[in-house]
Amino acid sequence: MADHLRLGIAGIGVGAAEILPAMEASPDIDLVAGADVNREVLERFQSRYPGTRVYDSVEGLSADPDVDAVWIATPNRFHAQHAMAAARGGKHVVVEKPMAISLAEAEEMLEVVERSGVKLLAGHTQSYSTPIRAMRRIIQSGRLGRLCAIHIWAYSDWMLRPRTADELDPSQGGGVPYRQGPHQIDTVRLLGGGVLRSVRAMTGQWMPERPIAGYYCAYLEFEDGTPATIMHNGYGYFLGAELVPWGTSRQRYTLEERGRIRKQMREGVRNEAQDKQDMRIGGRVENQIFRESRPAEWVPADLGMVIVSCERGDIRHSAHGLYVYDDEGLHEIDLMGERGMGMAQRRAELDELYEGVVLGKPIYHDGRWGMATLEVCLAMVESARERREIQLSHQVAVRSDYDAAWELQI
Image (cartoon, rainbow, N blue to C red):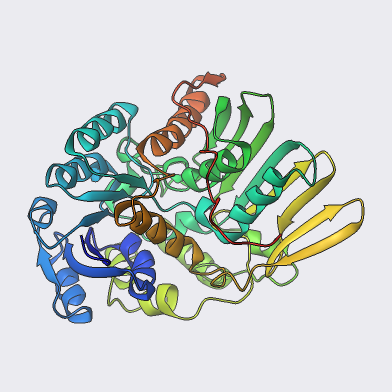
């Protein structure tokens, strides 16, 4: 294999629109092909990336001899099917969250990947972000003593974003627990060592126009008894960015736009298909949302606000990095030099893929890691339905050499 990784992307929708700028910026990645069933999207893709090849199926993409790896960004119900098709074609695989929609699918994916001799990365969670990686580094250093608790709360406008029919079907992985849960679960697991013992959760479906859960809250307990809580409210009345003095009441939409969208949905007059198409590659608002310069300051967005408590101090996000509170007072760690914080998460995913495939380094967020996070997502839904604590059995620990080569002064 050459020094560059030749990448194909399957499913050129809104998820792809988020990762494409990072692919373009990576010096080690060559985007060579794409697949989608939407002909207009394929035309836009090829117009933006002249010389790439396009396919109307993942199987066609997976047969391309010039593709080394396939990024799976198709609808959730197809993640397992498409990841296995790519693996059978001899391609390394990145699959977006959630890894699959059942543990049986995830287990079958692992079997096919291992039998095919390729590598699988469970991608697209904010556990890759620079501040979270720095939090873990501080915890591991022991400077604040033992980890005691982790709390994450998110308020977003996720439920107001345009959705296709499959995204509104819980049986196909629709709803905040499946679509946003992995961000917080991956983060909690990374910070706490990976191995959770149990989950007790509730979900909320509060909007008649959206037949999916737009809210969850969960108590997670690690094997050693360390507690964590996670919560996501995606209904968009109040936004988490308002919790910090430098934040605003805007995420994808302003306060006024959110009100207007809710009224359109109640009246049944929203053109959701067009709104969705506008966010895809070459769409009317794609540049504004995914390609314009990101704000210099961090705000609580889809991941939310993370607070880590240790025996002798606390850690949380700051505008430009982290605040660390200890017996000597308040210290800020500036992380803006680490490629900034806007695109760093997506670049880190690409780096892990490249280093794993081309340089032979470990894939840390591998299929078993992704399955462990999926298990927690499924357990939240089961716990809410049955109103009981769910014991976990597919958890895996963070590798001891995770981030060992990452040069960060804390």
